[in-house]
Length: 270
Ligand SMILES: Cc1ncc(C[n+]2csc(CCOP(=O)(O)O)c2C)c(N)n1
Ligand SMILES: [Mg+2]
Image (tube, rainbow, N blue to C red; front, side, top):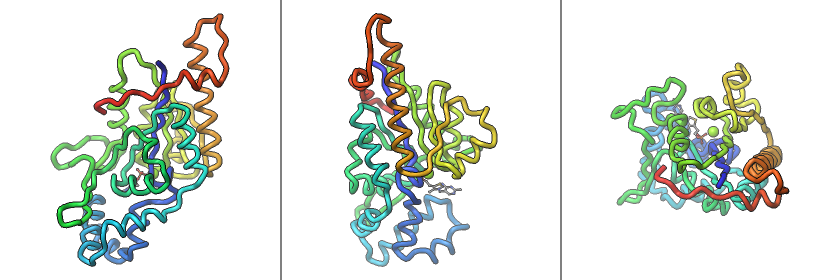
């Protein structure tokens, strides 16, 4: 059965801002953050910020409360719920971290819409301190991609997702993102796929500087309303095409048939 996989970046795509910066600013860590910025890799720096909060007696619950206040556009929440209800397989691919992402999604009733979250691991340790680690330990195994930060090559994760499809299953990908780290996976999308860059953000700038390098069809968006409209339109278009190509020429199809033909991909190892 055909399927649509929608891959969302998180910071500045699902939420309007940057979850790390939100917590740093809102919890009064800006001075320390800027003092240490040039001395530590990003994930270690965020782990150090969490250590500081623990030292100050601020709990993981307080961090979660802070995360719940980060702005998430209501039409983006609605778009995610609609795409899930239509049977798409939704995933997150983010250089934020699991605790931040899950707390925000949970608060908006969206966590259950996602089949997988690929991001930097985080957990609350036995001392009740929130720990944050890189997705990949670059000292142990560098990914070798010059487009991506050392802790996470989103293109490699996309390769794994492509490679995990059950044999014979045809899947169409829609990738939504804003940042430099979203360019590598964008270059790997196929010509039957779609990319939705946030207009005037780094991913959009890089695509615009040489559009011929991108095989996927490009649909820019700026506002939450546009994201919703474009995403749902693409899902409708893809499901109609899949329904037509998958049915006999004699059989008629309409958009409600298409929705019924879509399936959530079964969970895989990756
Ligand atoms: C050299 C360097 N500078 C900064 C960062 C951190 N960083 C870059 S984009 C971003 C937002 C991630 O969320 P999303 O992928 O959901 O947009 C973060 C936390 C890094 N890893 N390496
Ligand atoms: Mg982003």
